[in-house]
Length: 153
Ligand code: 4NP
Image (cartoon, rainbow, N blue to C red):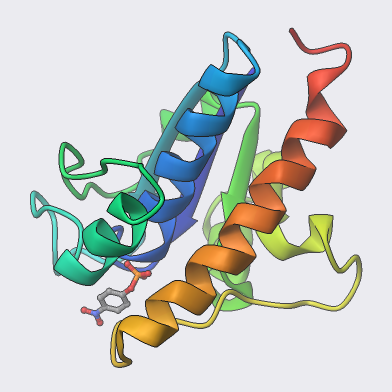
């Protein structure tokens, strides 16, 4: 099972989702592959935002290894599920990669089906906005484990 998380810059929300999911799959001993990517080029090669690193570290998760990258056409072949952190990113992915549309999902649909909810972009916000984004991501990733764990080991 291969999961890819996607946001705009790949420095705030999707690296936190990658880090949370890596911790959960280790805890559950699932042999899954997890990665993250962005759809904007502004921060390619950079570490996650320091506030995202700090938020994850406060939960025992180190994401400082991560370097931002763009999503590629190969990703749509490699990954089984592509989770957009926001509806705008989901819409972009659907627009550009129509043949892979069945793989593309909105992350928060796992918690709030059909409500088209996004993890708010914390980039212009405070550490508290990163904490709120982390909580949503953490809940969603725990739900994903429940949804996928049986039958996909
Ligand atoms: P992310 O946050 O998509 O969660 O990584 C953002 C990071 C940077 C920008 C926007 C969102 N930016 O415009 O540079």
